[in-house]
Image 1: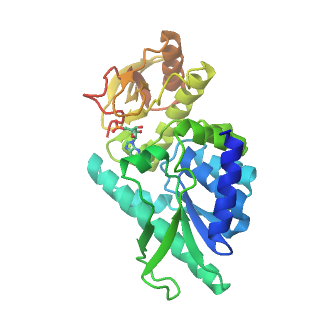
Image 2: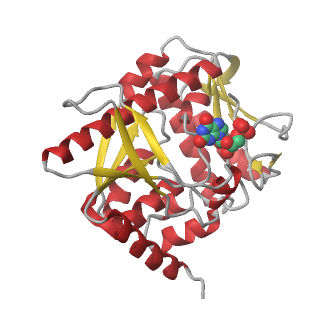
Image 3: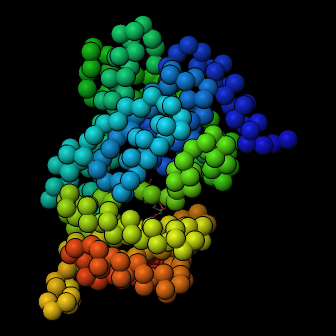
Length: 326
Ligand code: XMP
């Protein structure tokens, strides 16, 4: 019978046979797919796997810690964390255009990741070991969409670390390529991964960088992180995590409105709540969620987050609105 326990055993055996005594690298994004793929490969080959996590400073509150501490504690995986917050913020300084932001974040991400990768390859080579595999959390729907076929990833290295060749060629290991999302979550659970990672809702690669309308700065990110943490806390407390596909929390940093607090006038920023219901993110509807939960989120954000004096609800379906604001 087809159980997640069988899937794990089968994959572990297959990965061991394929990787042999060579080494593998896996990029962790904080999302469920890469985490489960890494955990499976770690179970198969242990310290022959090194994971890389690029902290771009655009994650939500607690997410980097979940990877650095909880994921590592649950799996014993060897992890290289690259703190690249300053680099990303510098590259994003002065940029408000959404497409520009996405391009910059994508570009910096690849550069930082490839540099870390090259360092790992060089270190291993120093010990006479060959890094030959790159682990990816490709799911069955991704495989179907791209027309099947396994391949190799041809990674161009921009940084010549220790006289490495310019092109590092890896074979791909994709242990989730037969699975759907819900099965991946079951495998993750079976592997003992933290609930917060296994049940995580979709979160975009560019992170909070595309949830700040206006320039991305450290202060604005901190403010949005607080508001987002409150919304997530209340949605979870209300038991709505499974009813809501995802709920972007957006800071309108370029907008101010007048408010009143105590005896004083305020002139602060609005926060947008964007709860959506969806099957596959291609189309979506705004979630009709309980008013009292919305009220609690609104009251807490305006009380607890300095400079936010208004909370608004996005009641647009997709299309015409996208799920994210940028
Ligand atoms: P939109 O905003 O296009 O989002 O309706 C559809 C889904 O995709 C997510 N999203 C991204 N995910 N990198 C990602 O990994 C991205 O650049 C990106 N942009 C949007 C979004 O959160 C939603 O689930």
